[in-house]
Amino acid sequence: MKWIDSLDIAIELYEKHPEVDPKTVNFVDLQKMVMGLEDFDDDPKRCGERILEAIQMAWIEEAE
Image 1 (tube, rainbow, N blue to C red):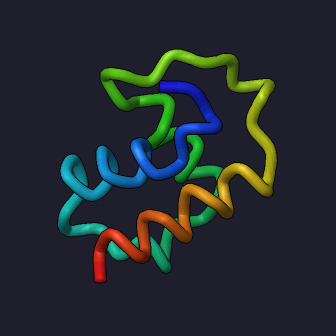
Image 2 (image 1 turned 30 degrees about the vertical axis):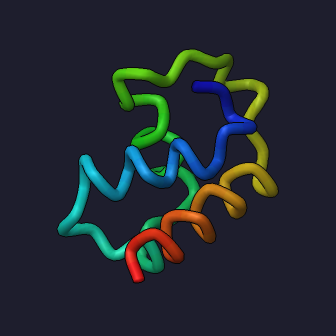
């Protein structure tokens, strides 16, 4: 997965961290969580606030 795969990342985060409320995760921690996913393979420098926001919003929708 790459940073642009926000929906796929959100699904993986939801499955790996079902106990976490995505609304409470700050962007620094979110970036670490994404980079810790087994299928994730992208450069951390390619990540920005907009990408993290898109991932977080998709994760919130997935959790609801």
